[in-house]
Image 1 (cartoon, rainbow, N blue to C red):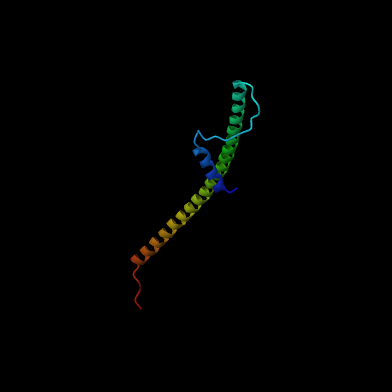
Image 2 (tube, rainbow, N blue to C red):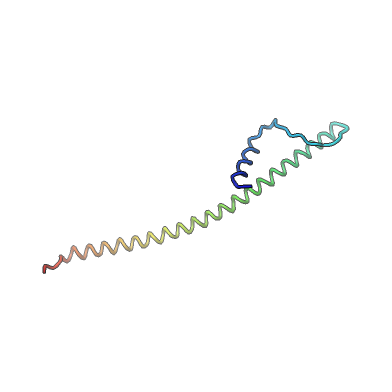
Length: 108
């Protein structure tokens, strides 16, 4: 499944109304306590599945974050290098201009 599909699936899971119910075969029950126990087991199973899915999403997002931080560091390094060379170029151009201003061109 694509990452976009997973994100949409997460949104749908989180937006589901609390009153929505799914049907499960829980077997025969003889009293209210057994029914409550089986319902809790089903709810627990659903919650654990959601939790595992959310854990995998968090892990994936952390991995993306690490990759983005590495990319940012590389970009910052490149920007710093370009900045240093730009300052050198600017200084060289200013030095050349000052030399031309101090020494007027010779007439032929």
